[in-house]
Image 1 (cartoon, rainbow, N blue to C red):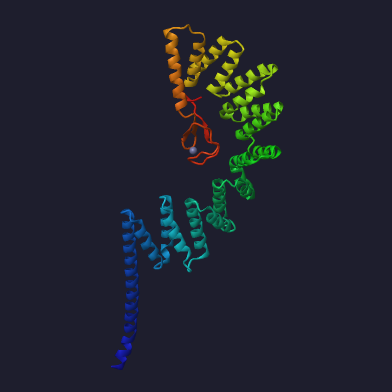
Image 2: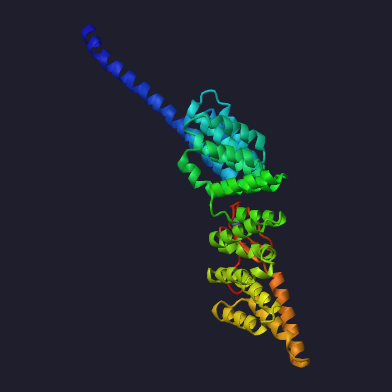
Length: 386
Ligand SMILES: [Zn+2]
C-alpha cells in the first residue's frame, strides 16, 4: 500500500504543478481580457468625443501594465496632433511620474512633453526640456531641431544661430538657407549701420545667393549714397534670385539716376527680362522709354511681352499708354473705363503666393505666416501676376 502511495507522489506533484500553471495562465488571461476591455471602452470614449473620460481610463491603466507605455505615447501624440494639448500634457506628465520607467522611456516621454509645451505655447518649459535632451546622444538631433523651432517662434535669432553653429558640418550645410534668413532678421533689428552690414555679410557667407540680404544691402548702400556698392548688390541680386529682382526696381531706379547711367540701366533691365523677371520689369523699362520720348518703342516692348507672356498688368499698362494719345470721344471713355476696371482687379488680387503651401498675400513676407517656410513667398507668375 505504502509503495503505491510512493508511486502516486510524482503524479500528484505533476498535477499540482499543472494546476498551478493553469491558475497563473488563467489570471494572466483574465488580466489581459480586462486590459483589452478597458482599451475598448477607452476607444469608445474617444470615438464618442468623450476624450476626458478616455484620458482618465488610459491613465488608470498605466498602473496595470508596463506594455501600455508605447500605446500611451502614441495616444498622447494623437491628442497633440488633434490640438488637444492639455490632454497630451496630462498623459505624458503621468508617464514621466512613473518610478518604474527606464531612462530611455523617460527621455522619450520628456521629448513628447516638450513638444506638447511647444504646441501649447509654453516656450520656457519646452526650451528647458530640450536643453536637457540635447545632452543625450540618442535624442540630441531631435532636441536641436526643436530648439531651433522654438527660437524662431520666440524671435531669439541669435540663439537659433548659436544652435546651428554647434551642429555637424553636413547638417549646417542643409540649414544654410534658414541660417541666412536668421542673420537677415538679426540685421533688421540692429540699429548700428556697421553692425547691420557685418550681419548681412554673414548672411551672404551662409548663402551666397540670399536675395533678401542682397536687397537689404542695396537699400543700405543707397541710403549711404554709396552708388557703386549699391549697383553691385543689384547686379548680384539679378543673377542670384531673379524672382526677387522686381522688389529692387525702385532702388535700382535711384541708383541709376545719372544721365551717364541711362544705357547701363536699360541694359540691366533688359538682362533681367531675358532672365525671366516678368511684367513689372517690362513696365519699368517701358516707363523709362516713355520718359525719354520713345513712346512707340515702349508700346512695342509691352506688346511683344504680351504676345509671349500675357499678363493683366502689361495689358493694363498698354491701355494706359494708348490713352495718352487717344482722341477724345466715346472710344477713349470706354478704354479709360476698361483700364480702371482692370486696375481694380489687379489691386484686389493677391500679388504673392507661398510656393510651399499656396498661402496668398498682398505683401512680401520672408517667413510664411501659414507654413513657416523661409523665403518661400514669391510674386505670382502667369496671367494674374508677373
Ligand atoms: Zn507657406
